[in-house]
Image (cartoon, rainbow, N blue to C red; front, side, top):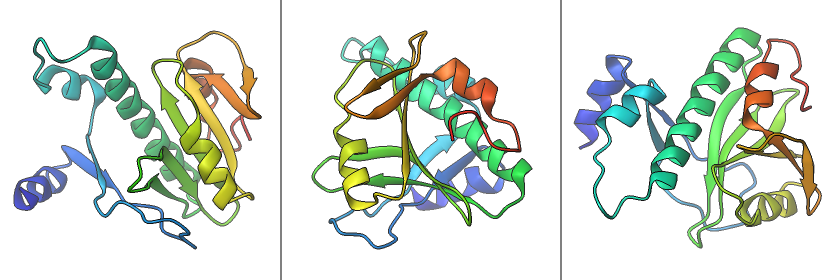
Length: 166
């Protein structure tokens, strides 16, 4: 399987995001996260059957779209920031960590309104990080001190300078 994934990466058809391990205080997952180069390709090749909820497929597609935009944003900024994710073995997860010289932000992408346990656990371990939840709503809200932004607003704000959510 590793060889197949490496071929997809070499052909620029996929990419992996490594685990954020700096000053790790928890037992973390060992495997990087895999994404196809394009959210539309992911959606078209992902098998779906009676046990696959449309919300799960839509959520993974939305996460892939955000990953694509974050990678482009980091590349255009040219400041050597890196994209990571964070997942503990107990199940807490943050979809994206943007970490660089002047950037440290944790971003969770939600297709549904779920509890923000992963972001809150990450903030406890890394209080200096900015945290943000992206969701498919229409307004900015705060839940338990976490800024929740409409994903559309977030994607539009990704410009090489500072996005509006910093």
